[in-house]
Length: 156
Image (cartoon, rainbow, N blue to C red; front, side, top):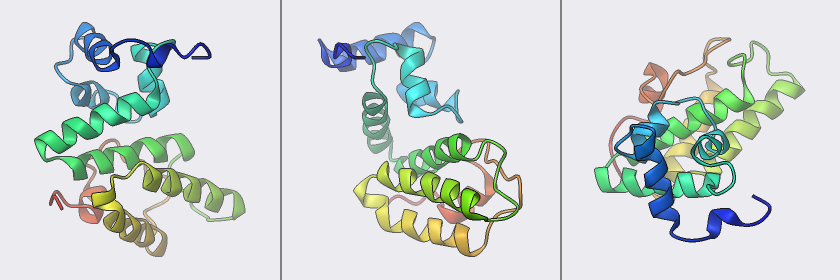
């Protein structure tokens, strides 16, 4: 995207045209069909030269707010961050390297969290660190049992 193509023209129209072209009726449906893909990977699949990850996330937030499913979106984003930072799942031992990977995933998750959910995300991250999941844990999607315990579907 060195030429700035992602910011040319009607971004929303282009985004939704690409989603529909792939057989999905919403950006959320597209993203949920790829639950462990990063935002960059989702953007690249929709248009490597003219769709940016931030545009995908902005569209996902807008849809989540309209449908009252922001908490589900937040859990889904943690799945994406963990998949990227911890491809082999939760580490058995939190040595320096593993601690950095976990901190990176939780930090990016927090950065992508809508303001309404920041406190809940902070507490959920603290809970994961205080009571780590079993080694190798890799949530497959936003409905993972542990994630539902950490962030139940109550909208704030």
